[in-house]
Length: 183
Image 1: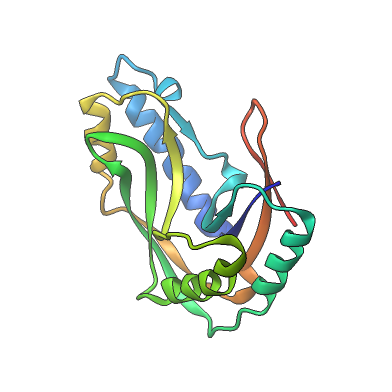
Image 2: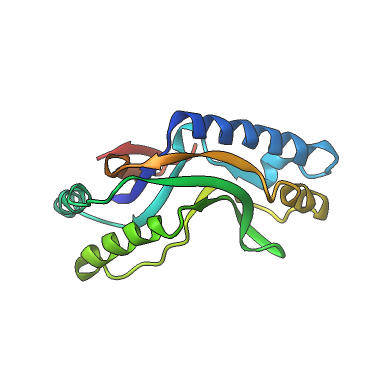
């Protein structure tokens, strides 16, 4: 099964991000010959999360082991700020639109601990703290790119991360998009 370790976002952060997604889609449609729905696939409102680690194909037994690893995490709660809008891999070739995640290095320490515990069975992984809000299907116009970057310093609020907010999720791919469920 496809699965990933995720941080569940509080409803108030999801709400602000979802309002922004709709606003951005409207702006990208305003004067462009290319409709944003044709160019972008926005992450479904209920699917917003921060991915810590992705697993392409794991067994039920491996899922149970990963869940135990997650449960064994222990850290003092810390603040995560959701701010700034950016793109991967770069502004000349945009594949993903994201919101930045800032934690004064605390989230990276949690990721390092997870990666250290999981690398023997699952190999090492990379991590860039972000919240994906859209995937780009076709090339964006210069006007659309400028509108995305006009939100570069946008703020979406902050929340306190606790160990209970880190979960293992199953990802089931469907023609309508992925369906995520907690394992």
